[in-house]
Image (cartoon, rainbow over all chains, first blue to last red; front, side, top):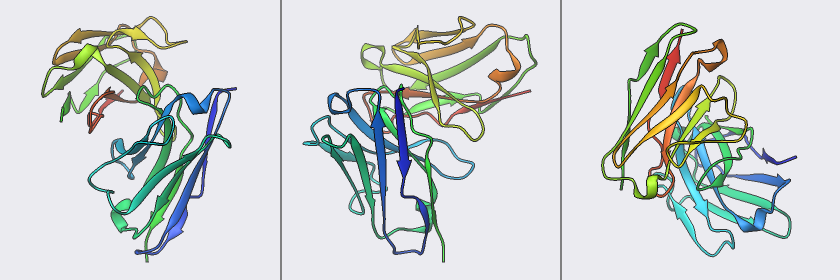
Length: 115
Length: 106
């Protein structure tokens, strides 16, 4: 079964850090670029970051540049997003998705930034 | 950057009616790299249409996409109760990639 499974979300104080993971199965993960997309409560989809199939190239939305880092481990079919210096406005469901045509999405992991 | 603007923001219709959703790009979309996604409450988005007019696997033929250049349309020919959701267009080649969404409500 083709699947993406995120983990690592939770409640964190402003200024804190989290590391999100996305485990892929059922397709050749190393052949595809991947992205993180987030959705704040009641809001639309916001692209956060993308990484090339090899991991050599990374891209970030201006809103997260400098405080989020995307990476991948193709030997473990896993995508990561390191979140640092978290702000209240980073509160959202974070989805991983096959990219650029997102025909596979994870179920999402909730990140709540609050004191 | 290409900005996608979806209209209307909310569309109120009844089952059996026809829905027409619009996605307008600020510049011409190369190679019609335009996709539509459906998101139901509490669920991740799912792909409906890619390359502006190709249905994704398993998508019923009541869903159709059309358009080119800067103007794209998602049409649902006869609304079923399960079609009431939020729909997003995406240009898979630019940043930011998503439109702001259209809520289709009963």
